[in-house]
Length: 115
Image 1 (cartoon, rainbow, N blue to C red):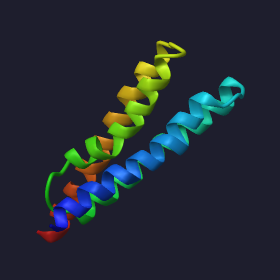
Image 2 (image 1 turned 135 degrees about the vertical axis):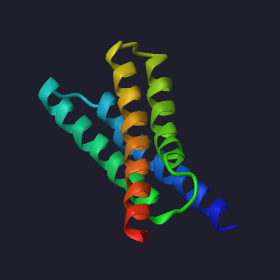
Image 3 (image 1 turned 180 degrees about the vertical axis):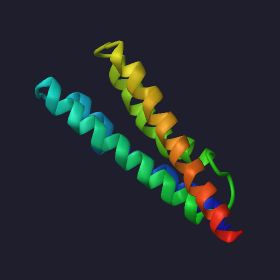
């Protein structure tokens, strides 16, 4: 039961971050430098959140990154249906890879600490 609640919470946190982070970062107006700063901060947030999940949860290791990053990728994919930009694919790959790496790193740190 604890893992089911953690999974639901991860999807909800990922959805919140995806909507208010990823979707807003590509939807809002601004210069390229402003968008790059915003995207960098959002990717950092994904890395930290998934790292915390990997650190606190014993099961699933890097899969927490998939659960946290997937809603953001889905929001970005839905936005791409209306305004296509090839750079959004890179953004999608970065969201998933940084989230998975953060979760794996958190799990690795927890295992090293327990030794």
